[in-house]
Length: 105
Image (cartoon, rainbow, N blue to C red; front, side, top):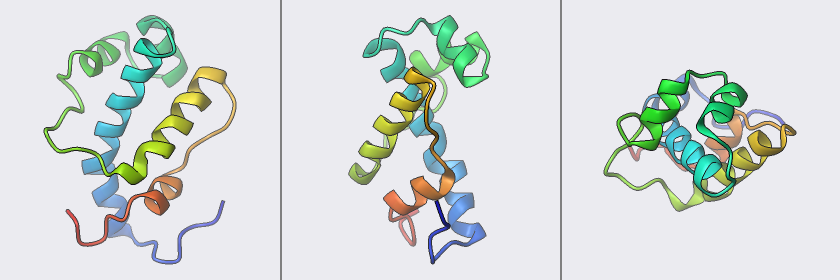
């Protein structure tokens, strides 16, 4: 995929610091609770520690009281499917295209 036309480092910075941790927490939650993947297997597939998965599941990591933009729902679901099946990828640019984050954070 190509970069969005309005791509700049500030959008990426906002995305990585503010949205991505929350998205990862939601993705891990869905992998374990909706797809039935064990926490241990999720950690292997994501390349993160088992402790990190546990922290995502217990909302100690990546949790915020702010709701994710509805526009990210399809990206999160694609990410869950890609990790669960081992096929496909999601890029930062995919997330930027789906989240209108300019001036919102």
